[in-house]
Image 1 (tube, rainbow, N blue to C red):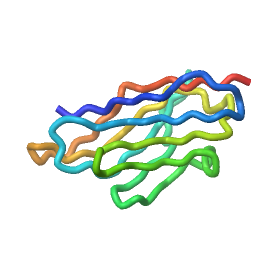
Image 2 (tube, rainbow, N blue to C red; image 1 turned 180 degrees about the vertical axis):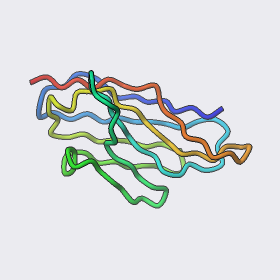
Image 3 (cartoon, one colour; image 1 turned 120 degrees about the vertical axis):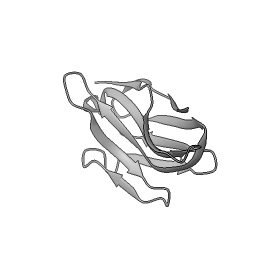
Image 4 (cartoon, one colour; image 1 turned 90 degrees about the vertical axis):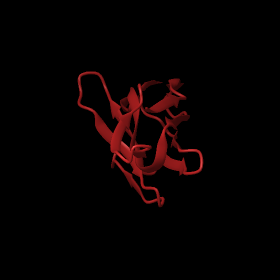
Length: 120
């Protein structure tokens, strides 16, 4: 079993900052691309940011310059530093990882989601 556990969501005022963290655990041989997605009420889930094992990053245009994704390959963790938050950033944020498990299967896993609420 491979699981992703997120932490760090909450309520913040517009202009504030939050940091989300996600840890992958279980029978893991290698974690490849990790990322964060979000889903606002009544909307589809969308990509926020991804980071490859080598550290290459990709951001949604709406968060460029405000959010920073990082990872620790030793501990199989990924973080999302969110600055200058806006009310439109309010959503449930999901961690995502592509993982090679102990049975050498290539899996995609999602976290349970963490709510970020930005008040105006």
